[in-house]
Amino acid sequence: MKKNLLKSKMSLYEDNNKTLAKKLSITPSALSRKINGSSNFTIEEMKFIRKEYGLSDGEFLDIFFDN
Image 1 (cartoon, rainbow, N blue to C red):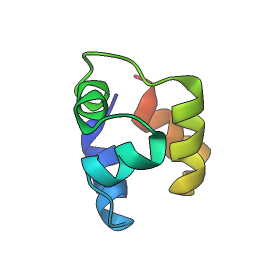
Image 2 (cartoon, rainbow, N blue to C red):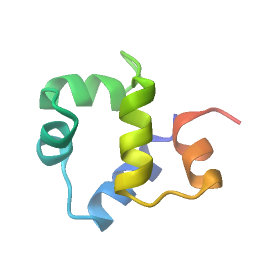
Image 3 (spheres, helix red, strand yellow):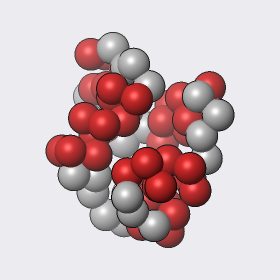
C-alpha cells in the first residue's frame, strides 16, 4: 500500500484520519492501523475511498495494491 498517495488524496479532499474514519464508520485509530499496514482495508472501505476521491483505476491499484 502506498500510504503517501492515500494521504495526498485525503489532503486534496480536506480529509484527515478523523474525518475519513467517520465516513467509513470506524475509529481514527483503526484507520491509522489500516493506513500503516497493521490491518487491512475491507473491500467495502476500498470501494468507498475510490468513489469518495474519484480514483482512477491506476490510482486505486497504486494505493491499495503493491504492483
